[in-house]
Length: 120
Figure (cartoon, rainbow, N blue to C red):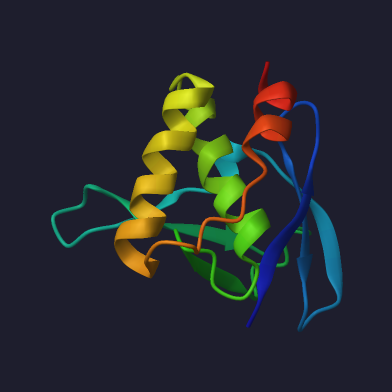
């Protein structure tokens, strides 16, 4: 089951695809929650995406390293942090550190300059 971001909009929402169902749509960052740890705190290394058309049939879990869509998933983590009030450069630095801690150096694939321009 695969729901993943394909691109992002100026309002910080994500254009998403659900492979199995052939559904597409747009999700806001508040519709893309962090997974929960056993103690019910946010797991900042994992985001959840439901099918973007709201069918309720498919949910995907994305690791901070990005899995099979590293550039867009890593960018989604940065945009999630920014949506919660974290300054853009700090969000990039924080997410990049988590990517490198989980997936190793060299896994980071976000164009930081481009993203900073988009985030203002």
